[in-house]
Image (cartoon, rainbow over the protein chains, first blue to last red):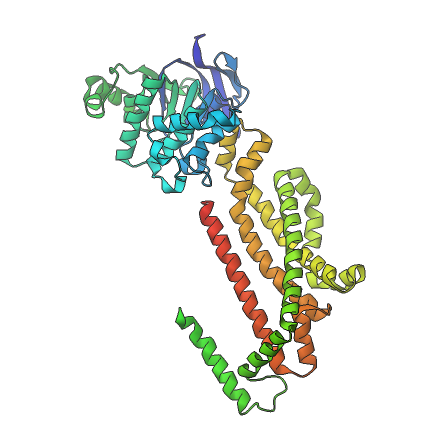
Length: 257
Length: 247
């Protein structure tokens, strides 16, 4: 896949002498939403961190926009699960978004308009002056997403971004991110341990297995989700395809295999 | 709130009663009322204000130097593992030296006066600030540093936008500790050696067998110390809230 935003070529990752990810290949095409699921400790976050350039592969190579990844780059934005520790508590919402623009060297004069635009996009326009401690968990995560959007990335890497939120907020944010991805034409690699979330959001779901071996590699399944877009919580989750995929993928989350 | 004053008031009343009856001939204690009067006389003849200004002035100046150098050195050692490795032995040997033990040396180098006092205060406050500043650098939330990496924020910008602000609440904890140390050390230097300030006035009153004035000074020093520490604590809490971190 030469037009892939992200490509893994036979990437293996060892940490502390243990094989966390066995040779894995896949690509993420422009505008695609790919979800990675798997049980705890299967290396899904490690895989995402390799895509971000935080972790170097032991073998194989990771490419973003065709170039081999040698470290973090501004073309990839990373959304951390723990928004509470990823936002600067001493800066308000605007200031937190500004960090991305400062890093990218955006002239001071252009910053306010771009900050206002991304805060508008995530629905925080009226909270621009609030500090993270004054925002709810869902709002803090939206703020982190706004900061990532501000860097205008070719690729969003999201590490269980809704894992720490309550069920209702999680569904609301799922719909928001799905809408955002469609409107802005984003490319997303999304890690989650929530099977329904993966199927609901993903164009494609990659299931990883823990403790990969030679004949049972990290990638256990790679499945296209053929549920029409835009999706809606109730109807999508009752769609026959949804139910079929859920049954098919259920086993990879620590139930057998 | 008023409950906190019940026990001190009772103690003062008991001391007053005792000093006026059984201990009327005591050279060591005087009734609190006499101490207040003696202090009022010191206030009218101006010695209260000059001595207070001298002690607080040299404590503040010494604190400013010790704190500034401590923060700078702490940042350097916190940011660079290599610098920390080189400095480790020196820090561990010098840090436990009691600051009071430096008074003779400070007297030889600076003579009597402000400079020797603030040198000892600076030495005494430098070490705890250094240790706390170093820890503050190392305790910056690792995920924030990863955010900086992901955004490709430069080294200088990371220091300015993330490391320094993240340190601030802990630096105010260090400041509060250093304020208390500075006051104690300044008065100690005056009691032990320096013929200036509140500590010296306290000693003079004791040596001229004036327990009322001596107790007056003691009460005044205690009151100032309480007020300054309370202000420093309030400042620390205020900053901790503003900067959104648990101190």
